[in-house]
Length: 213
Length: 248
Ligand SMILES: Nc1ncnc2c1ncn2[C@@H]1O[C@H](COP(=O)(O)OP(=O)(O)O)[C@@H](O)[C@H]1O
Ligand SMILES: [Mg+2]
Image (cartoon, rainbow over all chains, first blue to last red; front, side, top):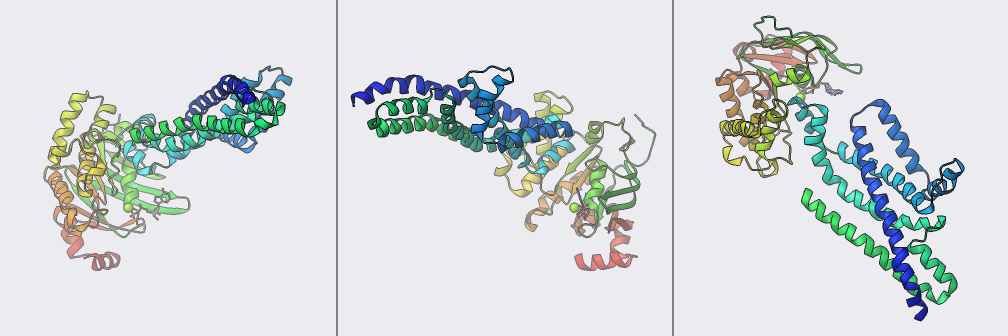
């Protein structure tokens, strides 16, 4: 019990902070990047499309852990120095943006063609049709999948332990290696922490969905 | 802009259109004078919708020429917006914007395309909603309206740019038979005001009574056309007779 209490400050302090920081920063990159790429694809420029498709397919096609290793250990060899925590954010963010782009694209194409056609027939330009007609309807359909993506980002942030970031899992691991009796209490605490991060995300998304509905 | 004097409001001259290897319009010639109500009838897949869609450039034609109020659709210097301001379109599925109230559906184009102020656009929209009998539904969203009401809002929306010609693509086909009447009544009223209209329709009663000109299409060609009385009561072509015997 004493050892558990002793391990707790690092877990609730640095560990939790690192997980939250990596997760939130990656979510923001995923959100902004996802909408950026998804909306660019709506312009139907062949060159932009090809670049976006390549980006999305490559990032979704490689294991996230490999991507994290590459950013953390590969980039420095190419002369781009980066610390472990920022590397985790970059990898998770790029991966999240690729998935976010597919979410946005999927939501945009799910809006019936007749909607944009009606806008075009009314004399609206392509951008106006997107902004006033298609996007507002598509927005609501991105909320639930983005919430799943955010949850996946929080969970995948634990991969950062493998590149040495002292986030929740890594903090727990170090303490457990010193005292095996801490296995159960610390892991349960870690699980509770992940839940405590994800639950508000889920609540916020439900509220947002209702608001946009 | 080419504004050569012409008697036709809309004319199609030798219009051809293919989708892939499928020739959907074969040398279509049609002229619609101001104030005329041209009704296009014919079996499904004969190219009726495609004709309408060539008129406002929703579909690009492969050959021939379409002229709307003196503007040639194949002329690259004619802007989409200038063409579409002159052409109002009403769709079978209404295609109202579900996230906007009836009022905003109607004010959208006047604001974005004509640059009217919010107050000007609203005044215009309210008057148009009144015209289609839905002034009190201005604040309702499409999901709160019946099919007939939605289509009447869609007509008001299409009228909001004060178009020179109105296109109706089976405006009543998605409606239950008992409520087609309220939409047809609005269309009759527009015709009575000498609105130039091109109506693809399965409502033979409407075509016969309101149409000033009836066009029968089949297989991408105009098989027969003329005043309603001659097409309906004295059809010449075998295909017209066969079609009419099925639908009348
Ligand atoms: N965008 C398109 N791409 C491919 N084929 C099309 C397209 N639009 C229409 N067609 C085809 O063209 C033919 C005529 O269609 P349409 O003009 O909609 O006929 P109608 O309105 O008389 O039923 C049909 O065979 C249809 O399948
Ligand atoms: Mg059709």
